[in-house]
Image (cartoon, rainbow, N blue to C red; front, side):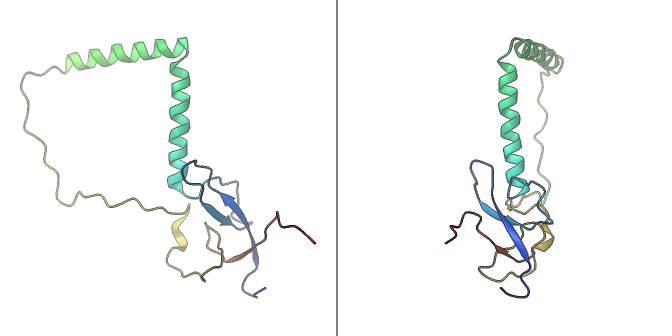
Amino acid sequence: MRPDVVDVLRQKSCRWQECNAIFWLCRRCDHGQQYCSERCRAKARREQRRAANLRHRKTPEGRLDQRDRQRAYRRRRAALSVMDQGSPKCLKDGSIIGPAFRQPYFAGYEGKSQEPGLPYCMICGRPGQFVNPFQLRR
């Protein structure tokens, strides 16, 4: 074992069903994270909310809530009835949005170089040694 490698890293698999990426966390940073990045966590949370809303809409109380929302929406739309249309809105200069980048929970360790092939903590960037808990002992 190298003298600079001191932490034992825990291997995790991202819980978002479309990602399943493997990532490592050191003992200090492991607080039960289930996702490899904020992006995966947000997407999984959005799916959970969508499923919960669907379950609610299928209940009798949910149907009544939907009915009330639709009535209020129709009232608002009727109040905004306009006969003449205005001019189209123009985009401001420089409003182009760049591509979404996948980032770890805390992006404080991005600029530092890692040794190739050596696993490191996804949050703090500490290099470490991965110990396989499922390895057969002989």
